[in-house]
Amino acid sequence: MKGRKPEGGGAVVPMREDGVDQFNLDERGRERMLSLEPEDLNPAHREIYRRLALPLCHPTRDRLNEANIFMFHQLVRAVARHEKLLIAIEDSETYTTKTRDGIQEKAKPEVAQVNETFRQIRTLAGEYGMTPQTERSLTGGGQMGFNFPDPAAENYFT
Image (cartoon, rainbow, N blue to C red; front, side, top):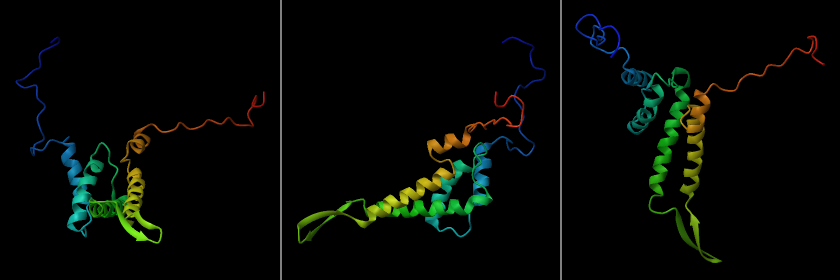
């Protein structure tokens, strides 16, 4: 390696005095997640909250805060409902019934509920940039503003 040799015995940057690395982003994200966690969550919702909130609280994303925690809680409820409905249709999505036209195979009502809760999840997840498309729209530079010239300026109509 070219250049001057470092002075002193170590080339490693020392940690903070309290022994905690100040750039430990994962731990900072976990602390943020726990500080925002609503106290009235039941155990099933708490597990879903922690699973979804941890990546959003990471300091490089920082998409979850006090102002939007209510809507995030709605997302957690929708995911819990969706997972419960998926278990209900795990064996079959249809049932057979005898009508005046003969035997028919129909979709269970839970299938429509699964579809609706998935639409709700997709909408709410999009608000937090949790889909690839919405993540690109949140992290990108966004659309450049238009520069409309002043019509009163000279040479506007020429």
